[in-house]
Length: 254
Image (tube, rainbow, N blue to C red; front, top):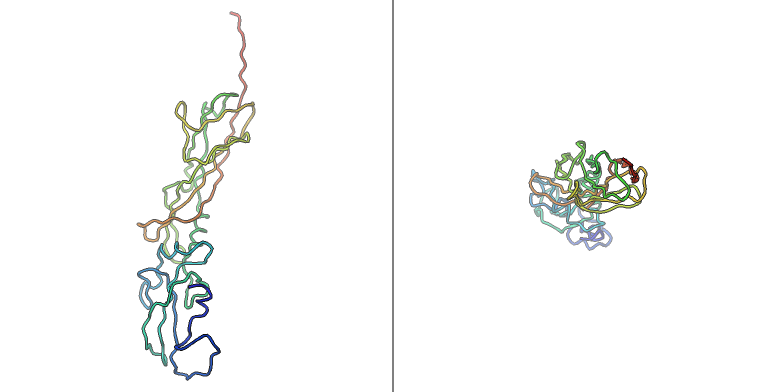
């Protein structure tokens, strides 16, 4: 249901959206509640406020969400005369009748952005972060011990719901400090002779080298089923200074 359709929901049997005329005090009226569109979420049940990945992920981009199922029952003189029945689905959670604050994909994206990431540091070969002009220099990524690496799980509680966020690698971008870079790539590089991340410096000097890491993430509400968070974040790594020297040939008379 669109936002306008939700706002136009009938308030009582025979409601056609026109002016409300005087009605008997005990005339039947509709009562609504909007719950996450999850199999366990039923009105007046112990699990009515349950959340699920389907409800969080299935609203179109740009809509508030989560996906809610609107339930309606008929009340007459304070008594239930027709039980709860589904009225439709909507992503317009801000106007859905009887909707309560609940976990949204926006909450998950915000938690994902707050994740304390592991920031990979780059090392080079020849050893000692020193190389020569026009010498092929090899690079390798080393994960720092602080923060969350791809595959590790960050646990938190959002709006009273236990949530697990598991980072995953989208790609590295190697920044060589001389205006050039390579990536994105999932390669962690390596050492001579098989490392596939290399660079040639054309002039001597000191160059701040780093690797920028783009993370995605999956989330789980039950610890077993994982679904993707539709967002990424790029985290700049700490810089390593690589010194480039110029070699000169010298003739020696023995």
